[in-house]
Image 1 (cartoon, one colour):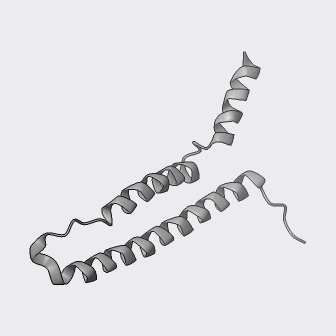
Image 2 (image 1 turned 90 degrees about the vertical axis):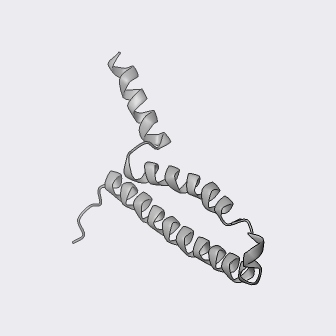
Length: 91
């Protein structure tokens, strides 16, 4: 017989698993971008080629940090809405 699943913990586990997948994709893609940069900039090292992969890293990194906070802190919209609702009920 299967034990009932705690829906709150299940949602939290899904968010954390989603963040870990997001982080893995971020690391793989950005490592690839830096590899492309290094391979393409290698012949012209003396011309100081601007490190363009920093822009996708920073932009995507903002989204990754936001994803981390929603997965590990309870600062997601649904949790905040529930807290505010509880405050309104209490008066």
